Image (cartoon, rainbow, N blue to C red):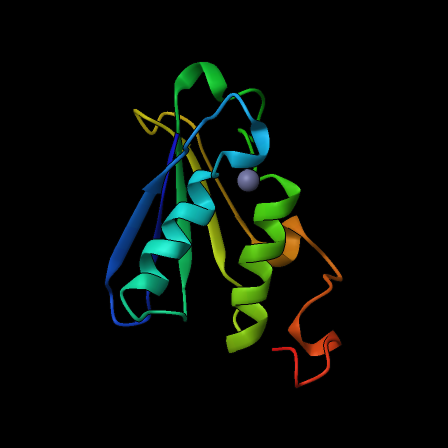
Length: 119
Ligand SMILES: [Zn+2]
């Protein structure tokens, strides 16, 4: 599984899932892609595309981001006042689901709920 993010100036950054026998040491592809963008000085994102192995495309919703990834994407979205588009597709693009972070995590907790000193 892999993910890429698109910045407002058209740059693309990506990441792949890092699986580990210790689940807490693993990294989701979505977070890896955002980390790649952030590491290159890009924090504002327009969209994210997630590519799955066809066997992982479980139902019409594909394999949506986990709760932790939804929160990370939502924080990025809220920080810049964007509703980040989230595209989930299998490798041959025969199945594609387009949604947004506000659809995936409605009413999200985020930076606006934290005291300014913490952000
Ligand atoms: Zn995740």
